[in-house]
Amino acid sequence: MRRPSRRAALTLTTAGLLAAVAVPAVAAGLSPVPQGNGTQQAEVVGRSVLPSATFGEEIPSGALASPANGVATPFDAQPVQGFSGLLKDGDDWLVLEDNGYGTKANSADFLLRAIRLHIDPVTQQSTVVEGGFSLSDPDRKLPFTPVRADRRLTGADLDPESFQRMPDGTFWIGEEFGPSVVHVDATGKVLSAPVQPEGVRSPDAWDLKGATPTLGSSKGFEGMALGVDGHTIYPMLEGAVAGDDAATRRIYRFDTNTGRYTGLKGKVRFEVASDALGDMVALDENRFLILERDNAQGPASQLKAVYLIDTRDKDRDGYADKRLLVNLMAMPDPQGVAGTKGAFSTFPFVTIEQIAVLDDHHIIVGNDNNYPGSNGRTAGVPDDNEHVVIQLDEDLQLDPALASINARGARR
Image 1: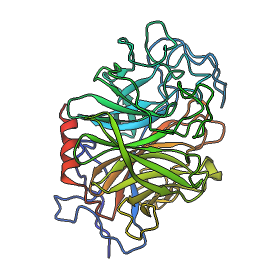
Image 2 (image 1 turned 120 degrees about the vertical axis):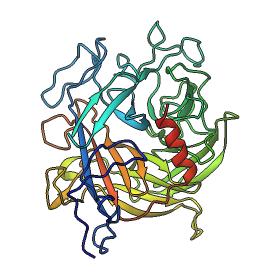
Image 3 (image 1 turned 135 degrees about the vertical axis):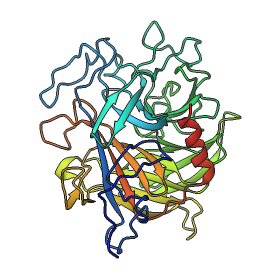
């Protein structure tokens, strides 16, 4: 089937993201999404970039971070980097920063924050805007003493990798050091002690006390989806638990009303045992989108992809049913929004750790740029923070309850 013209603009009202972007026009009487001919299931229709050398609060950072890609350390201020979670916030977005420079040992001077970001695929420029919050523990809810005397939390205290907003405006954060889920208020203040899954501990866990870890370092809760009911969260491990097949990744079920895990939602088999989870988001009670990636960057990248999984396990093999939705290393770019008009656009970053659903046919994906260490886009040049809007031929059939939850978040 001939694809509709892309010269007109469409407002993505369900997400409030785009004022104008090169996608099909509804006003012209055309289908809002091309039906395709079976050869292209997804294409990039928007891109926005925040420069790598973006800094925030003027508190020195990076004393133990390694210089890389021509960038010297330490820094005079906090670098804005390490985006590992993405939530709509009115006309803007909240992006969750992770532990900083990659390890517990080198990130004690990186403040943990959620940054408010304006993402604009029209101008292709992202900007930091007023808002966001820093994580802190003034009420001494954590079962350990934070590094800083003022109890602002750093990358030596927790490793936040995913978050979800609750209807009351508080947040649950999935982190890797426990691994655990942590409840914080709208200002980032810890409300209760982190909750860890039974029998799963990383080498960085505060309660390990000489016991043998059952999970690799930096393999904890990387992705976390919010359920249809608005109070169940589904944290997913980045790596395999000891005793599981090496390619197995667990999805837990956690009831935020009771503060307890209620078993496993399912298990996912990764394409290669060494692949890592990047992020996840729910489509309905049983279907989720996940980011799966290898550990390479640039031309060496083999797998950077969005998969659709269904935890109902219809083939009864013990794993969620799984199929490829988007190959992030080969996205058609017919209008050249990523600079590759008529060819394939790539997203060649070692860590791709943000995904959100805009509507039934559009998703947004972002990288963690690991400033200054990663250089997947251009050898020797530190990666920027990038987001791409991807249009899908397939109808995601987002559950109306989740669409409503997203809308409530957007009207905060």
